[in-house]
Image (cartoon, rainbow, N blue to C red):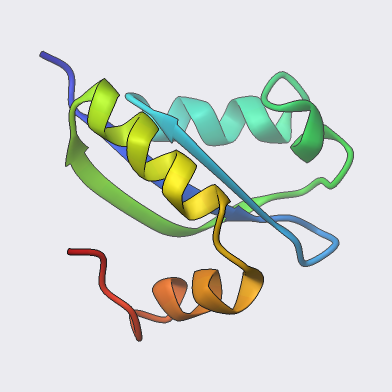
Length: 86
């Protein structure tokens, strides 16, 4: 079973993009070469500000959905480790 990661990217316009991957290095290259998400392709360059490993694909997808529904302030707290997911 592959280990999956949940990540948050900071885009050049200071917005955040949340996603999942089982190859963190490849995924960042994809985002920065415009073959990642459409959202990030318009806001290059992007860089990781949060990565959490150790998920199954299903768990990662569920966590991604939760984080995507958060407001910016809550995401910033998670990035700054002021908020820990249970």
